[in-house]
Image (cartoon, rainbow over the protein chains, first blue to last red):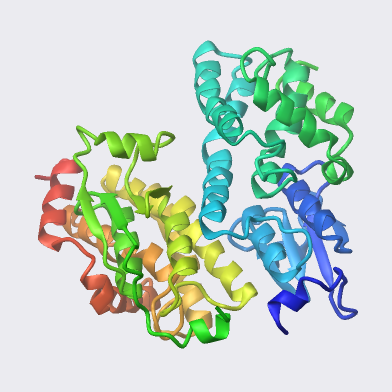
Length: 231
Length: 231
């Protein structure tokens, strides 16, 4: 099929497509995949995993990490949220998740990797230490890079006018970190320090497709109160 | 240009293409990019960085990590070796580095990520601890996944008959870890424990395009003797 023609055809799922997602309600990495699936309008079966008693399927599909999310397309399992999202974007046309241009795509991959490897660990270290000053300084340093990126580009989302790969990954900062901030009474992403990032956080969690994929905030706040010893 | 036609045209570089690589001789991540460039037959300028006195260009191009390698294509900088390799594979046709099929591509991305996040840290922990038993057990556990992957697929390389993304990433295990093993008198990837992986290591470092991108082994061995306190 000519790629140019293919993009004109409305998104639809082949009748034989079997799409399953092994995850648990509230998993930030599972939610990333759910947002990607909702963006593409893909129907999927959500298979709730009990992390204290993982299913045989999960252990078979992801023997390396034994972790959710695991995405299974017509019996073929894929692990790691970034890998899954790239796969979904390649297989299903329609709303693009990664930029089409090779250089912009490389930049998106860079920021997604940065969020996972630098930003999220730095931010969650702050919660673990109940706001240790040095940890806050380190988290601020990482968050400043996201603030700069939003300022330079001047778009509503990292992906431009619509959410894309980086927004999906950074939803962790907007929603999960936001809930942990509330649970612990710690303010990290404030309007004063990070005006663009704060605005982005609001845009991100109010974006319908993200909203549809998120767990109830109050349950997450309660969970973080318990997890970080503030219950 | 029709994509089908484009692939029939031999690899050539546009006259205006300016390709630079900021790295240092012996950098395993820089070498990954060099292998990718050599695979594609891309001419590039190698800009030697002094890590104790990084160039202003490096700091400008990679303000987040301030690390090599930085790849600069017509003035556009890209950091992070995996991101760079994906970019090179997308922009220059010819010998493919990533598989064409979406699922096989996802698997390659999974293994490349695994090598960087799990395997290399586990292996280098062994050298740092001069072969601590627990560290060796953990490294063996990770290496076993690579052994299994090679056994199941039954190919010469992770990429099939020819080297691909996973082979380029795993060259760290074949060459750098091999040199550190020699420097410290530690045997990790042995024929007894990991016959397929050992065979792959030999195939990898004897592959011409890899060989051309590697630093002299004896210098690396000397470096590791010094670094790990065995000089």
